[in-house]
Every structure is written in structure tokens, then in C-alpha cells.
Image (cartoon, rainbow, N blue to C red; front, side, top):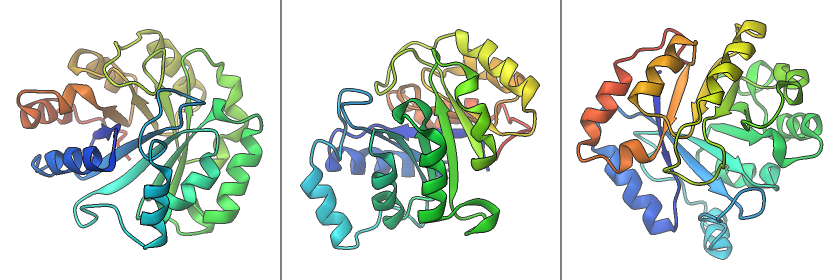
Length: 239
């Protein structure tokens, strides 16, 4: 898989479809992350929390995510009911789920329950469904280290306030990643938030597997060129 994962933070179903259509025009894009923000754990709320009935109707009708023949979908669950929301997104074709460590008071229970309910990793649906943990800049690595055996990757947030695209990259994440990789060299790492070409170069040098990018790509005058420049960094750790 490639290094770069475009992220979409939809304000509506129409907005989601328009942004996904834009990404189909970048030939090398094969993975897309959809950011899901509930307005409680992080804010402001994004779609589908702004239109829950519409979303539930889609699930009830068995609708699938657009362009499943082209993209694999990753869902960044910035919400307090992540385990419940996971089921709806998996039903629509998503295959990779990121749970935020700070969104629950019992991370171990959340991850164990999600594995029992949906299956992931070697015990079930190997290669089809993956779980990851996201951790905020202000959180200690001790929050996630007991549970690394339950996930396939760790996502470090590169911005101080999650849930908003367009925020500046926070350089504190460099040291956080350096420490984590020194302790856990085999666990894939991805970074989400504020990534641009200068920060991407250093992140790749630190052993980051994937870079999740939003505004820098979607608001670019030439998204193809931006994507190509980032992808050219070619992390040897890509997953």
C-alpha cells in the first residue's frame, strides 16, 4: 500500500460524495479515511452526526459507500459511541477502524468487545478488517501501551485539537513518535493532522508507515501534484 491516505471530513452526505468524486480523479489514490466527529468527544459534529436519521436509513437500506471498486475505506471514530458506529460503517464496506484512546474510560474493554463483535487480525477475517488506536498529543503513551497487542497500528494526532481540518502541525508529535518507535519498533505508525511536505519528510525518517492528509490535498490547486510529491517519499514501513 501507499504512504498517503487522503482524509475526508464531511459536512453532509452530498459533501462526502463530492469530496470522494474529487479523489477519484487522482489516479494513485486507493485508500480514503472518513473522519467521524460526534460533537461531544470532539467538535464540531460532522456528518452523519448532523443527520443521524439519514445515515440510519442508508444502513437499513443496505447502501454501500461510493466507489468501493476503487477505494478501501478507513473510519476515524472521533466519538464516544465508537463501538456502535463501527458496525454501521463496516456494514457499508469500511475495512479499517481507528478508535481514539481518550474516547472511553475502558480502552481494553472497547477493543476486546470490538474484536468479539466484528473480528479483526489473525483470529478472524485476517487481512480484511483492521483496528487501530489513535492517541492525542497531550496523552501519555502509557494510555495505549497495555493494549498494543489488540491493534494493527497506532495513529498519532499531529494537531492539538482533533476534529478540525486545516490546523497547523504540532512538532511535539516528532518526539512522541521517536519514543514510541524506540519501544515498539514492529508496530506500524500513522500520523493524522496538519501534515505537509516538510513535516512529512521528517515523519517518514522517523519510521512512520502512513500519512493521513486532508486540507493540504483537498484545497490544493493541483491535488495530483501534491499527492505525487508526498507519495514520492516512499516510506519503507508502509502498511
